[in-house]
Length: 370
Image (cartoon, rainbow, N blue to C red; front, side, top):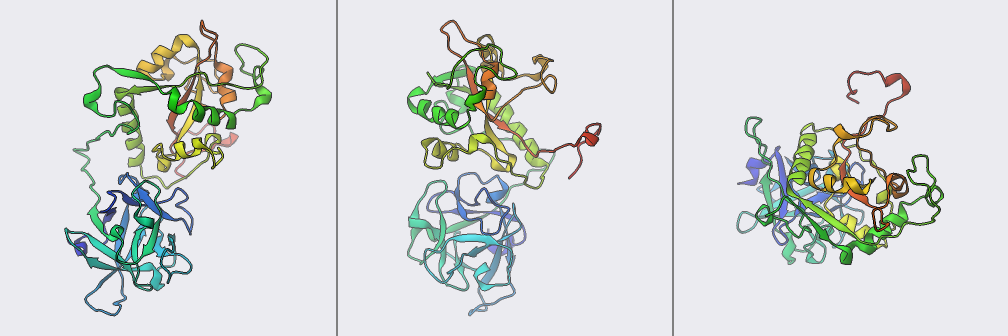
């Protein structure tokens, strides 16, 4: 499709060399947030609007555009030192400057190059890298990463919306056809034992171990040690989870990013890299959180998931599914099995947009809009 026909409508900008998409980083609400490659085109951080610029440049036949990020409402531009090759591509909110404006140059096979009007350098990928989180910079035209496909965002009608579930690529059984059983429990201790131990160490308040307010079984110990790690691969549960995320996205609420303790692991750790590449949807505040349970409930959770309908009424906020950012809190709800081992779950949880109530608002019948 000709780029002119895609002006003023949501589009994705796909890198031909890598097959991944231009994407704004997780701090996307701020000026100065940088751009990267990412594999998911359905999130608002990977969607843009091209707006025709009034500037004609040196050639009146050139199409010159501003690139507006859907998630933030800010514009794609070159960072300070914007005349130099290798300068990072960031977002900012002053589109009047020339380093915000991009010449659309037609290439082969419906692809285009995007050339900064001020520097005459190309939008490209640092060192022609192809992985998620690869940095977007301005480069000269001989790089293989300077070709992009501008594609219209598909917006299905309300009468015929269809959710296509992409299973996590790191699952052993990551296609529907590979599921010959309802679910699988995969021993991943070899790969994840040390990583989960790092996350556990970073989220453990040792002062409350064995003696917290909700401690089921009182004991004396000073740390938690991971003995094994198993991953639950349940197609039905993950499909329901993905459908719920899709439903939350349909509200199109403005971003309201929150941070939890499981994200505060040292950046130098293997766990930090693992979590960064785990595909969590930050637009929807998808997090890893802990859930402690008794051994007799593990099988039911594995097969059917957590169910608030059978939850205890004695919880602090009544019946519900309780998750914690501190493993030491979830540990209070764990009891040992016949081998004297305890089960704690590290779960993918979508928090959505958070609403905080003061005591005066606790009687509201409906969640406020803001």
